[in-house]
Image (cartoon, rainbow, N blue to C red; front, side, top):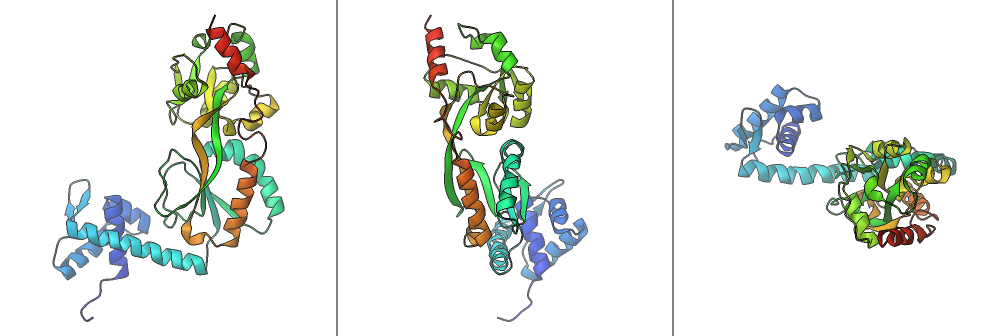
Length: 310
């Protein structure tokens, strides 16, 4: 095929601009100036003889031709990156939320490094959707409520068990029989506003509860509960070590919730030895005794039902 070929830099500038809906954001991602991105895209438009972008005062929008080209370019760039990774993979990167990292993963990392001292492990703090190639992520710990990327390999870990937790002092003050949750300060996370409703439903209780205070992140919610500011609705995995140490108590136990803890595995890295090692280790850790609800005595829920029936 004859004729001029567009430059790779120009094609990258177009793909990033359309994906991010911003030349400025594209320039930041590509480590070039806004002017360079603009010139690259203009050169493509002159070469093809058609407009690729509709330029607004604060944003840009792709024309149908520009959108179609950008979509194909995104796929092509991902294929290039994944092909390179298979021959020369980068560092192993695990993505998880800040709370999972602080409350569950860090206390267990020493064992991983001791068992696998030759594996370099990096971290990505994120609890939402990701692009494995662009974000250079190998494995992600996620809640099943989050929509996974296309073609990702999903491995179920454990059911997510949920329940109310508070400080020992708070339970001593507020949980004398009969139990009155309506007289407690109920705490929730803004990332899981329906937590109390889910717990009531899964517990089979005839009760309507609304949290009085919300925190932006689970780690703030857990700290608030530990400091005696109220009783928090949390997934058990996030407070397992605090329960074992006595920092927190779960006066009503835990029930199986609507969601699962899952792993997302980058499809183009599935055969990598370090990936298999990390996935195997995470699987063993997630499935250790106590991670779900088997070791929790169901008596607290029975006690609550009895109190409500009075």
